[in-house]
Image 1 (cartoon, rainbow, N blue to C red):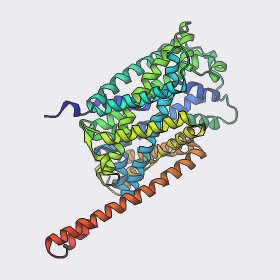
Image 2: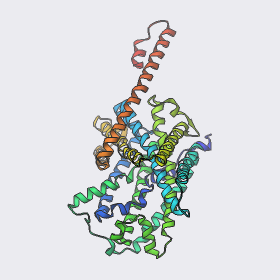
Image 3: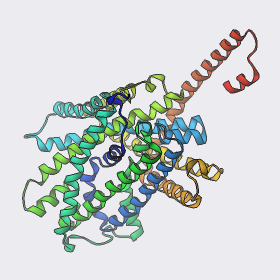
Image 4: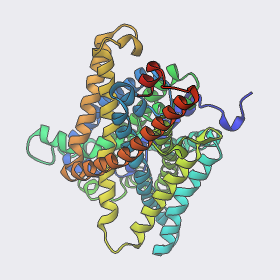
Length: 462
């Protein structure tokens, strides 16, 4: 009989994990961020949604083939070997814990709105650390608590966002919309520029695949959760942006620091919109931190089981990789402290740029692995029949991931590449240690047998 604390995620919880990880704090600023480009940004959102759903479908196909925890890492290693698997795991891991620090930083801004008076720097640091450690404690309590927190937080943030999105359509005024291509130049240029800001809105589609080992019936539920969670997030993104565009005048929206709050105030002629949206934003970010704390532990867990990360990362308690959670939250906490105590304003910004590139590496390797399985004649291991359709999905997912790289910008790609190559040194140390251990084991086996090891055993060890 299974311990309740290690109970696996069902489809609703897995879907909430995907939706909760995709929808963070950025949604509350997105309409204002893309407003300068005009309503062409709505078209950009629609195009990106197609790419994100294609990527979610690819993860579902791959999970049918190999439903182990680790998702993109597992697929990359199976297709391209240990080094590719390590790069996928390394990139995802660094992206996750640095992103958690960024989320905690964002939460403080919304908490400041809810509390009377202005917080001191030490108070802001305390709040940021609290935002990191409370989700970590929920993770350490076991997958049962992770799932419970994720479902509750997803509902609490999804409902008010959907409310604004749907009710806003009844207050929609076409006169508020600005020009289609308000940024000037070609429409395609405006589409690309808006897409560059929106691209990372869908990071998190891999969440169910990353935790496939904790999902019940992962061959079916990982794909379903990935698609349903992505569609749920897309619904809020698209409807919410349309509602804000139609309720807040374009000239005001361009300079807005709280577009959803402005939309609520415009709809109901009150001043309580800021408080409502700030509360929803805090819940949204804490829910995202809960899911991303788990993700930051799952990537090194899968690699550690294969000897490609330190062994401690493979230790699980109550269904959760405890050391992965602890190391991730400690690193995020250190980064948060540096952000609030450093005299430089560039430290945090530089590391956040790294995450924008790091997020794309596992996606490119996973979709590349799918193409490899299909083109090498192993498509039956992924999905029987419909080879052309699966190939189209894989190519679309790869194109979406490649677009993510292009949209990250030169600085993000440059700095992210440097950080990625830093992982090569880590891999060299771990691989060398594994090889020495394999040689020691082979020598011990030879000594125990009283002679040279059999050829077959030596070949297997190599």
